[in-house]
Length: 234
Image (cartoon, one colour):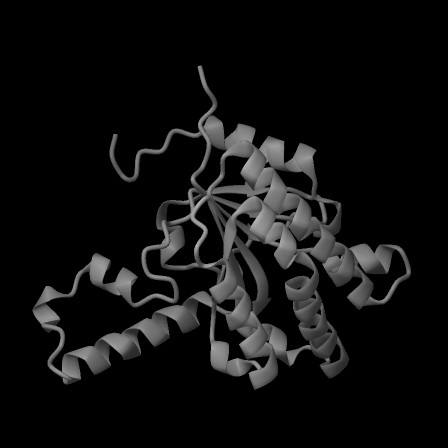
């Protein structure tokens, strides 16, 4: 029997700081190592037939971290866009950002949106980076947008259903994640894709994100293949 492959894999990338601490390195070195893992996982998805990959890269709560770390993470994001966009073109993967875009300085936001525009023509794979993202913020922003549409007479309140809400999320039409992977062994969802994760399967690995590789990814896919997905039915 062929192995069941998830269409959409989402990953809570956790453990960069601990990886660095274990090696006596600054936390930013862990984030740099984690950035290289992102490249590997993009290829693993393409090699295994996973069309959608969503990575929880920076939460709205992460802005509370020390200024030096936040600035370093933003620099890493810019480096990723500059250095790895070529690989997105080679893999024919479209880059999309989900989160509160206005939280970023104009120069970085312009770079993000330019990379999105340059890869928008591809449809063989889709990479979603969750940046300045939280599940509650996404639902809140969708609710505000729906309220504005109702107020403007563009939407009938009685016609609102789950599909309507989906149209107002950060990336309308993005399939719900079939599989959510969390690295570093933590057993929480951390405010990630709360609406979309209603029937997602979870795979928790103790592996820290910078060490996550092909063996870990294959273990997650193998575990997913054994799950019986009933979506509330029998």
